[in-house]
Image (cartoon, rainbow, N blue to C red):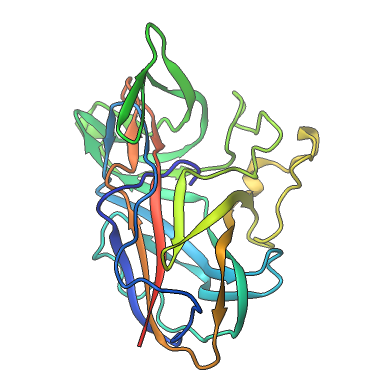
Length: 298
């Protein structure tokens, strides 16, 4: 998700025995690490009742993804409610250590998400939605809790018409992020709208920050293959072909996986104010979020 939330109550979504001890040749944390910056779009943000994401792969890699160590690798996908710390028990059931030195974090997820929640008289609207041009309207932007109000004007950004003020329409909204920006026809309107994008997601591995994180919309037939940054718009495939999101970012410190490693993998997500309703109560979008993967050695 291009705009996710972050901040103070991290949700432990995985704590599972795995074959990974002495896994990282760096200091690993058994506690939640420091939290990064927070961005909030509008004044009506909330922790969703549920936010379901389908994960296919999570792990470590080299720069070109030719050598990967997958903590999670499930071709069918595993749906997880990352808004609820108790919703997932077996996202990862076993990990075989792939010895080597890794320089990058990567993840492959679905670009379709299911969200349900309400706040201050606004509700998510049952149905299926795609990104709409300039549909999210708000006057106040927050950075680390500090407001910046658009005096006498309104910010207009792309969003999802998945909100309502009618309680009778309240339900789970299924949203598909088919591009990072669209025109009125729902297709990308600028070069780079399939990526690389810089997610509003602070990510760390064992407390080591992932830097230079890029996010791409890809296809399930080859999820590691993305549209080159300088590709002309008239050569873009249709947005309907995008059904995966690829995260790839460089670790600030390389990680070494040892033979016969063993330990506990922990993944954390924070969605304390993960979704925002716009001022008109007819559109939603994601705020910032936080993700951490730690390994506790035995």
